[in-house]
Image 1 (cartoon, each protein chain N blue to C red):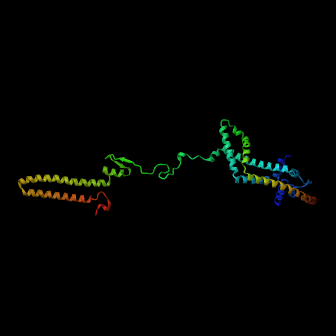
Image 2 (image 1 turned 180 degrees about the vertical axis):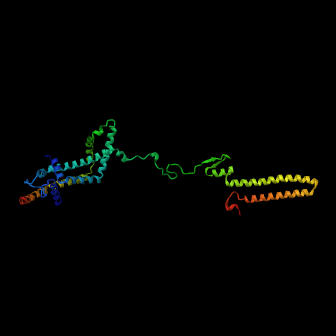
Image 3 (image 1 turned 45 degrees about the horizontal axis):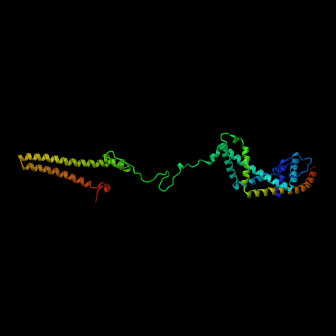
Length: 228
Length: 119
């Protein structure tokens, strides 16, 4: 009660400036202004009105109704304003597009594509074989003979081949000369020829042995090519 | 003077009206009434927009829309909030009335004394 009394006493003082004392009911003295008189009139009217219980009910309902209407109007205006500025649709946001939804199945990535290995094979232009894509470049290297290792192997093979062909041609020439000489000197020429042959054969054999032994690593490059 | 006018004037004067209004706003927001009414307004606006898209009359009859929304909003208020508010309003109006009459008597006596002193 005391708090409401304070409230009722302070507000009229702000309304009517000439009041020295902040009190609600002041009789119309010489210092009372029009404002004070109106205030009093309002309050007196109200009090008189409220004596009747019917009026009290009506007053309560009326006040409640107006307050609800005010709140409703406020909300409506807010919504309307949002709609006019275009922010109403913006608040809702865009609906999630079913085509762009993230896929969360076990074996699929987020686009829905399977993560299994794809059988991407390429045909080698050289040998016309189907090679796996990951192994394509090394295969080409060996196939076309342009890589480091393949060129080494190739050159080694060439060397041994030259050796054998040279030995075969040289042995044939030596035999001829031996045969001619045989007609003339006989044994020595043959012996010399055979010596030469032997020499040639032995050296080529040596080279052959070397190449076969060193290349006996079955294509593996472990342990520096040596097998135990 | 009508009841409505008097009540309005008095409650505004005493500052009670704003107090009651604040309390009501808080209660309504708590109980979610505000969101429901907002949704209701939005739906009605959509309907009007779809129905009256060709003629832009929906924009002009803003007040009409409000008067349409208000009764629905009134029914949406939960009973508990309504009862609480009614009780509060009643107590405020009645206590002011009774208290005012008591003060009236006291003040009169005080006023007379002070008045004589000032004069």
